[in-house]
Image 1: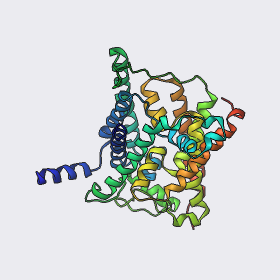
Image 2: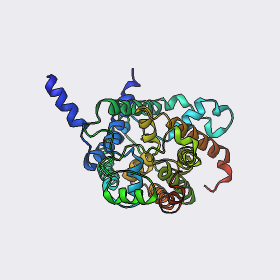
Image 3: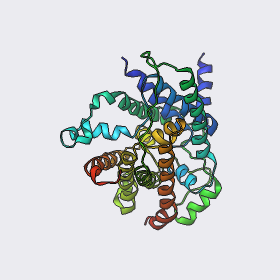
Length: 137
Length: 199
């Protein structure tokens, strides 16, 4: 089945974030206290490798499995949206010590209480959908 | 052969240093681009809302959630990955986060009792029992709500902005990451010290 390859990618993601301890509340707290290079190393080396990969994709006009050229769409320009939305996200990230990917990974590791986080996250997304037109974009 | 597999298991079970994890995350992003998709885990919140019927209530959720099936499969794979690591790849030290001694000391001063070298991956205040305290609700449900709201408002989370967006040199993603850090620093330095210790 075509979908099974995405399950494998997700499993790889699970291994990376679990074994590097990025799923840990304590690692996120440590990062925001600037007490270790670890999380900055993960994000920094991911971005440096990512920049190289994206540049190769663009310059070589690499194609995806469907045979189409890989295009990375530019994100819409706005400041308040990214700054305010980002700050709200950051508050939740530091409080719960987990962003969406670690939440799924920890659910699988047996910390079923993250179901509450998942439902709260869906509620947050839903409330955003309701308020969207009244928020600065 | 069996011995080789055991060695492989032990090798994977060691804690992974940052310089292994970071490039592998970029590889995940590349594999998804190669499959024709952009890395972004928080979109699953919207897909799940739509799949649960929100697509009939609000136009923001009028999306063909089935076309996001690939992303929900990535999330499902992450659940499987978490299961496998916690059952077969923890290593001799167990489910430990190797945080710095400065952080351990800081946590102790704040009233979170942890011992260096024995800090659990998930703290005890993230559990079903802690939902009997207001702090537990704030951390788990409040944190989840803010993440779900903020990620959609900002158009992405750590995977979509900090990794994919910065890799593609997107200025909006840099602004979003600055936002992540301002919100995170405010919580860490101002709010978190007020909610501990949990009595």
